[in-house]
Length: 139
Image (cartoon, rainbow, N blue to C red; front, top):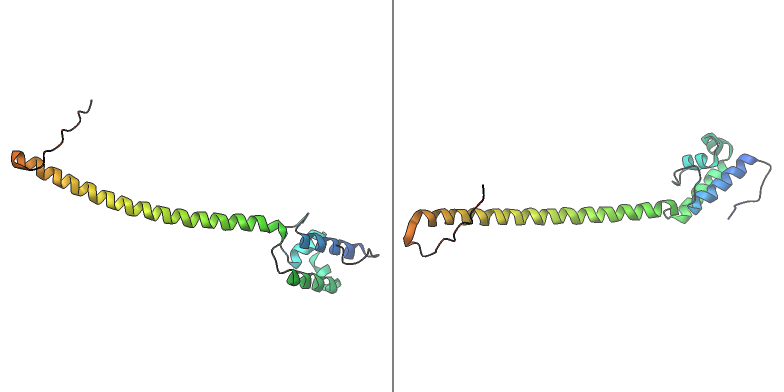
């Protein structure tokens, strides 16, 4: 959707076309961010054209950005991917914390079993629990 019809000023036409591309989320030359600097890059003009020569277009662009109040399509996929990665990261952190707690529990159980085994082995035949034979290890 073009804001105005073609004029005799090619700079103005380039700015309007760039504005339409940025707001549509289809940038050709810029990062797609909705800023005056990126609008200048997208239009292939110097920034001063917007800040000194075509103030009306700069203000129109800022008003349209505010009215849109949404993320441009070019960034929507990246932002959703970023949010997905943040969720996965949080889940992995929680999973690692759970594994660390299990590891502590297993280490405590193994330590306790090792102490009990040492006590049974040292006590000899009068133990009420019969120790299991150790598997033979090959050299």
